[in-house]
Length: 291
Length: 203
Image 1 (tube, chains in turn orange, purple):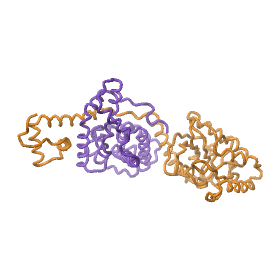
Image 2: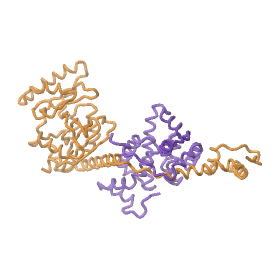
Image 3: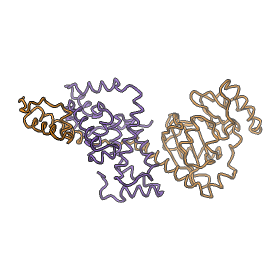
Image 4: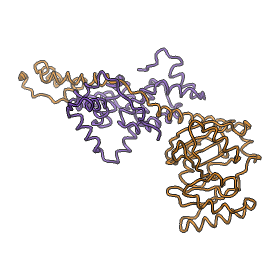
């Protein structure tokens, strides 16, 4: 190591890096220049600093992994569907559809909401009307659901109040259940698969009929927040189905809403709430207005 | 650094179509730049799962805020800026947890150990993220944008929302900090980086 003539101690690597970046001007810069001309060691450090940049530049950028690509494409498609449907909100066809109770409105007012003590969420169970019960699989609420199974669908109105009372007793000293939600979350054990999602959902909706409702009609809770977030932009009154089910073997929320002349379905993670949603899949269904 | 020279429609045109209601334009824009945007997210966040979340946050945000794009920078600059912000947001949220985890220290350990076993040496060599992880996030983001992605200092300043001088200073300090790992980074040179198909998989 030769001693620098300028009586300068070796600048540290950070100073040399700043010098190389043109950040050390004036006399300080001149002193470093002079020092580098004589100091093999510091010149070597400068070479290595250049090499750091060169080596980083040579690292090829990683390709976006396929699962992430798929997830992002799905999320963007959901965004596009939301935007499309909010633009359709002025479409007279959808207005008519949302305000006219059609023959398919089979779930409205026949829903009885129970607040079930599920681990992390207030869950609304479709309880009256046999059509819903066959969908209820094993889940935290299955005992409650089967308890309501004996209620004849014909006396839906009275069943409603009875079940509400039952719900009150079950929830004990929890805060009072809010006004019964008109649009219920279906709990099912169905395992939807990516490859057959649209077909499975069309089958489900075909068998059990459709109701349209607004996300605001859901009971408060994470599921409502999730639905509001995912369907943001969709006019009130166009929700078709909210279901907690499974997707590719994992717990998931399934949301179907009118989107233009068709229906859009979203599958989200169960952690979906008002603050974050991660859409696992989305698909378009032949909507009722297309039928 | 648009990376889209000669491509038509241009990025700006795609963005304009998106704002005008074209349902496919934004997806096309995303597909065009996704690998570089992913590189920024992954290198800045240093974790594939978090990077995937950050990139999704960023793309949703860009989708919704497209009308705010002023055209005073390239579309790619604007997109990178949104991704960098989303990535740093993720890191800030994660910073509630201890900054240096056991995993980071092990990664450092591995970097500094010259392992004679070629198989293990390969594993070490492949993980450039381990080297970047030792940098404070603002320095890391600057280095990724300038040295790894090749943006000019001025474009980097627009992406990072700071002055060109700050970009230079962050990069300089970051390079100095990485000096001890030059040998490790050298091992990276000729190897296409292996990307596990499971990275950032279904949540």
